[in-house]
Length: 373
Ligand code: ADP
Ligand code: MN
Ligand code: MN
Ligand code: MN
Image (tube, rainbow, N blue to C red; front, side, top):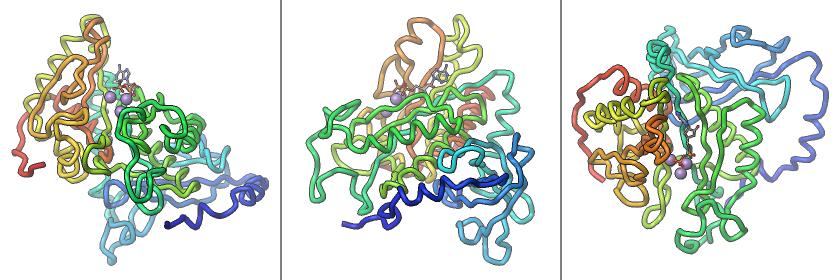
């Protein structure tokens, strides 16, 4: 079986060097989404003092022709720092810096979906939109097979694994624990974790986050997960259906509320949003994975706690619907609702922007979908 060369290196020896004092310098790791819209890239620079706010961080650049982001002839792209976190790998005072990407002419790069999302969030700031996203993912060995599964076959059928405990039920908890603590250290708004229905599949929740913060915190949480898994020699997959057949897929349920939904009688506003969503199903499916719905078509079958990709549905406590109103929200007549359609590999900027456009800006209309599952 293939192994990760880096994961085999002694982490104890590495730690000797990481304990060396770093003087008055600070390491800032700049992170950005690459041209695939899914992959993350990073590189580090030394700063002369600890940055206190995002304004203290200099712009930077990179070679976009090596990240599927530009042609070779005009390959310099700009990195614009937009959010700063504590670095759980190099620790204080070092930083993780999330960046937007601009092209050589300083126009927004095609895969920089943060730019328009941020504009929309600014327009609607007075509604105080909150999001919570439930990121499901699958751990794979270096051979691309789910971590801990027998190499030539399958574990026992689904049933005992969801929120499971024990060596035969929880596959890879070390990763989950390391990631949870690293997110807390970094200042990422992680709300919780649980083991999922398929063995080696897990979930973490980010939120509630207001506006653009949702996408920023989810992307950094994904980066931290990839980086931790690199140390362990494990691969993270956000594929929405990593194993075909009778195994659950992976989504990124998105919980949403506005100030008025959270106040007394807010259920009325929730129902109005759901009504608007019901008339714009195809547009949302297009925004909910990086291939315009093709990835999600493998997952949204109507089975395994999903709704069919071809129809919109909503209901209280219904986990087979596109939209679920939690039972407690139905009872209290205020709170939030959950859109269960986004794929695990969605861009949270695209998802949250689409929700604001439909639910709050009351945008309508779309071309029909043209693929089948
Ligand atoms: P589920 O029951 O669907 O598995 P989870 O507990 O996994 O739900 O996730 C619920 C998510 O909803 C969390 O990310 C949480 O931060 C978020 N959330 C809670 N209250 C609100 C709210 N009022 N508005 C938006 N998101 C919320
Ligand atoms: Mn959940
Ligand atoms: Mn889940
Ligand atoms: Mn959910």
